[in-house]
Amino acid sequence: MIEEIKKYREEASAAIEAASSLVELETAERSHLGKAAPLQGLKKSFGSLPPEDRKTTGMALKEANVSLAAQLANKKADYEKAERAKQLESERLDLTENTEALRVGRSHIITQAMQELEDTFVGMGFNVAEGPEVETDWHNFDALNIPVGHPARDGFDSLFVDYGAPGSTLLRTHTSPVQIRTMLEQKPPIYVITPGRVYRRDTADATHMPVFHQLECLVIDKDISMAHLAGTIEAFTTSYFGDGFTSRLRPNYFPFTEPSAEFDIQRPDGSWLELGGCGMVHPNVLKAGGIDSEEWSGFAFGFGIDRLASLKFGVTDLREMFSNDSRFLAQF
Ligand code: DAH
Image (cartoon, rainbow, N blue to C red):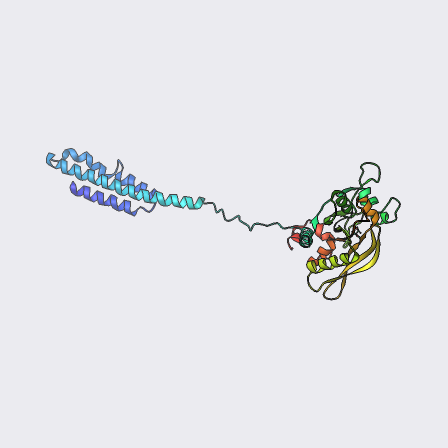
């Protein structure tokens, strides 16, 4: 019987060893260690053994079972570990697969231009002031020496707002009313720039938009002359556009300045760019701002930002800048 135990034990051990999966292992367990297995069947024959052999045979059988159970358990653990690893691997979520490069937003080119302009003027010692976009006709016109009936009013193609008396409230047509607000709020000397959005009743085309941006500059101090105006425009020109750029003034007319001029920028290639208007602040404007024109004098200038930005970034149609197409915006 000891021989049989040895034989069945070896068979069972080989079967366990040969099992190449958890399922095969369970089959081997059933056929070699289960109730119907030949090894277990031997127990039934114990009664026929001579009593002196029963102990050794019983111990051999027990030892075979214990050793086979251990072998089985080891192998089972290996397979379970492997299967678990396989399952984990198959269920693994690749958290990196959706990391399409993060899209980083950026400032609109008008905003970029405005910030650069502000930096330039702040570097020259100016403060930045702001005013409302919905303005009274007094700030937008009267205080700027454009009384009711003045022909210059027509030129501004105003968009009036249905608020208060008819014609009393409008979307500001230029940033010049902030000159008045600043003078009424601050005591001279005043050195400010006022960038902002302005509105005119214009049909959008490649070079016009009904909403656009201007930058106004106002200086009020003692003994300010036209030379300070020309010098400031020239300093701004080289500082903002760079070396090789220069500026010039050409006589013009604006109701809020006297004398008035238009200023142009000359590019290194010799070509001229008309930029904006300027002049010495009209005594009536100083008066509206509560400033004594006998004691103080000043200059002002204003220009459009959109055309500057479009030239700088090579945009040929202003409408593109406000189309809200992220493919356009992402270029700059
Ligand atoms: N406000 C004028 C416009 O929108 C531009 C301008 C001209 C502003 C002369 C000024 C100035 O400050 O002095 O057409």
